[in-house]
Length: 594
View 1: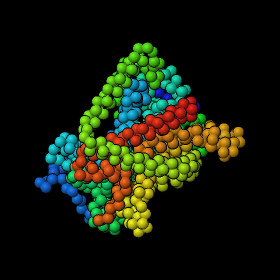
View 2 (view 1 turned 180 degrees about the horizontal axis):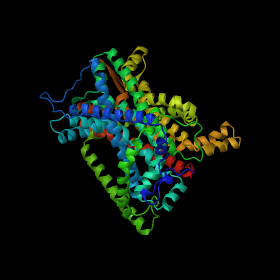
View 3 (view 1 turned 60 degrees about the horizontal axis):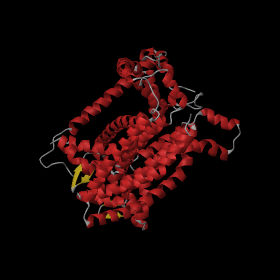
View 4 (view 1 turned 90 degrees about the vertical axis):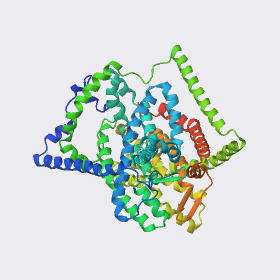
């Protein structure tokens, strides 16, 4: 079984062998390597040039009239708006990745922390984007007084909250399902914890993590309008971007300009796929657990150019001293150990004390909330919010079931067939990354023309942005099935039913659980923009918790916002604890590749 990059690492980082891709690039004709170097340098200069062009506008001072509440809808501004939106998305993705590595590792490697961090992640996933904005917009404005950077930071943070949680779930699940023989190999090679992280933990999680990164960006696009046209606490803050452009154009009933924004996104999303996701997914194939090469390797023109250039040598020249330094700094922390040591009497006592402390903290928070709503009207609001939450819960449940029935077989077909994946994967990425709420004005008009009840129509609107969580995770799970197991099913002449019950469904079950958790959480979050939709002077409203929170946040009703967010957290955490977590534990115990 391939040991990822262990064949290039020993007890010391400078004992690594030469990178095959680098060696291959040395055999390239001089003209090919020179052309590749020119293209790579030109791309890097163009990237830094665009960033340098954008940065001054991000930190410009707030004018005497305050933060604008509207943006221009001139079509000539669309390219600049697209750059601003993509910049926010990538910055938020970077911070989401850092958060994922730290949070997921802490939750997987420390048992006590996992008992707090995983339920906390359930709660964070359930808090809608308007809940985060209502609570943090003032903090960001205070941190960056008199500057548009405060509003920019609030917008990036809002996008971050729509990206980070499912990435952290995916990385955490990958750490718990590492093959036993690879874990033993890491310990036998006496890797430091830093080396284990980069030589086993990250490579093992790379394929599902990349797919969840794509899905996270899609989730960020879905909430782009809410994060660039921030309407909280009875105020509106507008930032230049595609989301705010569409919001203003919809408000003024300018369908033509909304169409131009959609055309812009149709150009931007495939460009991101070609320049970022396709090279990364092709590169990640090196981390597949298999003894055989893929039948049809994934290719990328951008990745081929990078491999033929000298950028690998440049990165190695810069990174090797850093790797040496981190090796010596992390040696005192000890060698790689198990996920957590076996519990003894003293450890059980500490566990009980730790959980008691957490219980006291939770009870204190609950007491503060009860005091906040201690009057009769407050408890009546809680009851009303619980009823609305039950309505939204039924919508989320129906959405999850229907999307699973539709997308699990399709995701398996895409993930297990490289030929289909080559052509379908870019289309899936485009559909998942496309901000479906850009189409909400047209969908609203369709609902009105066909007399479709928004109570049912909101399920469709929620699914437009959340169904991809299930599809992407199933594709990742199916594509990670070792070729050896596939060949075994053919060698034993298993029929289609047996292949599904003995290999495919068990192999993708854990990925489906991860996708189901994030899809359900995303659907709850999406309810704030799906249960209440508007076009011009027409507004369609469905009874549900999303509408309750959106209305409360828009007028700055802190009490109702807290109640709505708390009720949503109760529903999400309850569903995760009672349904999703037992399923995920079962998948880890029965169906992990070990």
